[in-house]
Amino acid sequence: MIRTVVVGLDGSSWNVLEPLLATGELPHLAALRERGAYGVLESTIPFYTGPAWASYATGASPAAHGVWDFLMLREDDTLTPARESDLRRATYYELLADESRPSVLVNLPLDQNGRDGIVVVNSWLTTDEQRRIFPLDRRERYAASLAGYRNYPTTFQASLDRHLEDLCSLEQARFDLVRELATREDWEHFFLLFSSTDWLGHAATGLFLAGDPGARSAFLRLYTQLDAYIGWLREQAPDALFVILSDHGQCEETHVVHVNGLLNELGYVQRLRERPADVHAALGGGEVRAAVRVPAALRGLRSNRTARGAARLTRMALRRAFGIELVTPQRGLDVDRVLSRAFTPTIASYAVYTRDCDGNDLQRVRRELAALRLDDGRPAFDGIWSLPELYGRDPAPPAPSLVFAPAVGVRPSVNIRAPVVERVRSHGRGAHQRDGVVFLDGPGVQPGELPRTALYDLCPTLMWYMDAAVPADADGRVLFEAFTDDAVSTRDLRETADVARTREIEIAASVEVEQRLRDLGYL
Image 1: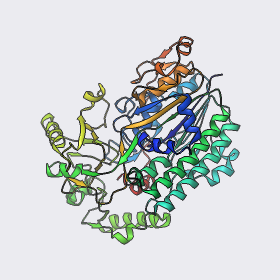
Image 2: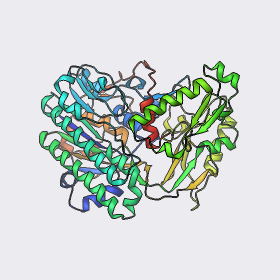
Image 3: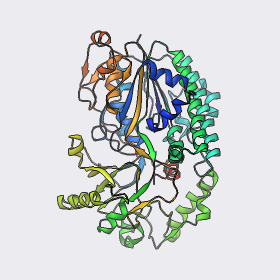
Image 4: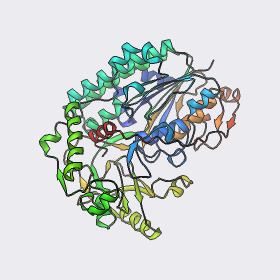
């Protein structure tokens, strides 16, 4: 039996990992790199957790698999969490199940349902605790571990020390469940994602890179804890192909670019507060007579679960009874997604969606985005593309008209603000960068540094290594260079064309997920 184990370190990159490895405090990760193949793993565009992990799971670009964001923009202009049913390509673990190869998946960022041959512990995009684990009969088997399981921290607004304690506690509870699953379930493939590396990265990557002692201590403590978990998993499956990867990396956040601010200056954005009353009523909403900003003192209560629930009820009551829309500053809630001709919905979108825009409009938007400069003279974006230009595919709607890659250190914003380009005032936070990390270790792996590798390549590589059929139209390829000649010669490359899925979208609005993304600053 050929087994594989994949561990995700969300948002990890070599600029952080190398100094941590140099301390000697991460023996298991250091051994994996010493024994195996390793290198830079290039993410997809958008290089954000939702679309990136969907690309990992399918071996396909967002233009092929159809997931563009944490919150998907639907045909009715609502935003709802990305679900398994949004995928237009089969995942590798579904294909393995078709060949009677069982898998366990913990914390893959899609809201999933169950199927035979796969045990799934859903990620923080799933708010219904009754759907936390599939098959549903596993709830009783793992009741004790699930009772202590938390999939989302509550301390984003707290100090770094409190945030670190929260993250370490969360990952301990996750690993308590993982340990049971790994020893009690029958599996040939095991996937586990640690999310806290990305959450800590958002809070303090800039501080870490600047040599701040507190940040260095925080990162080392979290990674040391995860390193021990990785060591335990390696011991449980010593003959498995063992893969460590991240879906993207992080760098210091230096600038913010208010994309909707630029689109507003160009006349493409309609503010929600300016929507005509008769139009708002015709679209099924009450009249919006005013948009009121949430006071700063109340915004500080967002980390309190009870306060968040009360705030949601208050927001709905004010909107329905008095036509008052509460608007949180710097969160882009004032963008009318129905009447705007061009806008970006979340900071994780890395995209511009358009309505009733022709080719001249798109060229104008692209030209103006490309003209934006940072205060050091660099372009604010490393590239701006139409989907056929970037992916060679013309995806089904709803899909962006343009996607972009922000420059290193740049965070796109959904705010309608001027100036469009701003240097951040408080240094120390992290911003996404495209380059992540990858390690491969196990029978047949050729030790050494790999050439630059694409996130798409992991899916076909896992399938090939397990002697399963590889998706014929995958955007990735098998990483033959990561293996010895003997390992390559003993495995045939089988392909399957049966990877398309019928899209059966379940539109289930989740206010809780939206609030979580708002806490993270994604909205």
